[in-house]
Image (cartoon, rainbow over all chains, first blue to last red):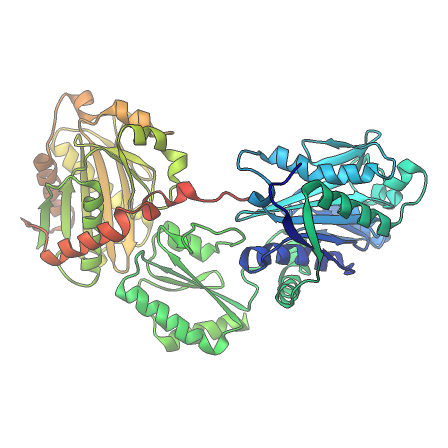
Length: 354
Length: 246
């Protein structure tokens, strides 16, 4: 593909091998790109032995956990959707986090986009002498009829996260032992009958991608705020069974979530509640997340912005038009009236104590 | 004493703004509890949580020069024209000793509406949660909106609506709709409906009505709400522009 303008992106290649932490980095990269990071990112990393489930996939832990334990394999729920896959230090992960319009036109459908994101990786693999094919509507790369690469995807505002999990030297014996389903996977080394180093694979595939898309790439590390966000995501989400087993995101990355449900446009009383809540949380600034929802308008002008979970209390307030409502950690604690700052503070403190 | 308000204005954005203005006014303890009867020019009104794209053929509306507006209550999209009569109750909860249960409120109000229709020889039935049927077809949809200690309860009444336009602009009506004029060959007008409703509300809740008009402060607030809310695409078709995500 020929690009009209050279597009600059950063490459973040790092040595973290904790699979849960790496998923936290995935989500942090996506959020940061939306909020503050000016460049698209291509991220490269390898995981310890892990089975990775799709973010909304049915849990198969009861089926696979014994086999995972036996093989010292961690079970992780991804930030992205896609099938359940196995990875280890012989698997190369490569993720694009890009603003869709930077590489694609509005008329390109998702299948075309997936295919075009796979193509340079397939070309890169072929440089080792492996004849490859982009298969499954752009969602995998195969060689000799067997799967060399799985993909995973997530969307966030106008961003796309597209990841490829490429079997370079993946241990296929462990893969077949731990995965429930029949697997037709292979590795580049198995196809070639020789070992390809992870370094060579990484370098070759990145070169292929940057050449293919005409990208000017800069090697960078994660920023401090990305590191901090990833750490919070790990602590509150990816390291927790609530996410891994049940697929439930935490209500907030902070200790207490306060949702305010008010009229649009806010009445004087609604403005008074907003001010009271803001004042009540001042002393707990880093521990409380405040979201102000407006009836019929949602949060920040969107009914439910990407990545935001509507709590049970908020859904009830919305459906039953309970205006105003103060909802703390998903429970309606004040409704149809203006609570005092003292009452609000007391409820927030209760929320912190869990 | 309640106010019986028979509005002559048929501009949809202003009418929706008036409804919210009365509600906000009443919430602040101003004005009177009100039964309002009103009609809109050709328009499509979507529920406050509705994605207009999913329920309305926006392109057909554009071609037909029809406005698409968003009301403050929930529920599905409705087509309106002068053949449709709207009725609204805006009152303090305490005036009607209302429960907070949404379904209970529908049941309570629908009983009153059915009695009013009965008095006009329209033998309709309530179909929970919020529809009134005549001969098995929808003639009225109900919605409610709670606001502090005040309620807005409103409904439509298909008397002689252009059903062809209705089916052209609504993408997936949940029920078959009909006009009272088709089923009964009669055309109750806004005055018939408002009188019947006032009588029925009196019987149900013991309230008295006197015919009134909008207060100047309500009109001023309605003008403001029309300007900042009901005449803006940001409010009316917001969700049609929503970015989809996986």
